[in-house]
Image 1 (cartoon, helix red, strand yellow):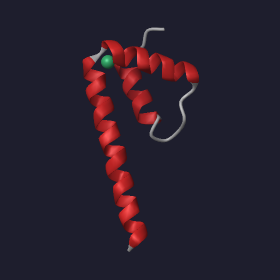
Image 2 (image 1 turned 90 degrees about the horizontal axis):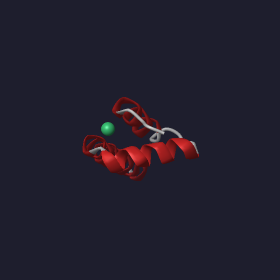
Image 3 (image 1 turned 135 degrees about the vertical axis):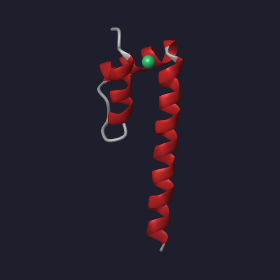
Length: 62
Ligand SMILES: [Zn+2]
């Protein structure tokens, strides 16, 4: 299954909100292996998710 960069970016965004289906995960992983640009996007999304988690944790303490 060949995934476009646009589709890969959509999946990266959606996996923040929901669990991806197995075929979506496989397609995304395959695309990330061959596409440096989308790997960079993946890193940004991971960073964002960590940042949000940190903020939420901070709110819980106060
Ligand atoms: Zn790509």
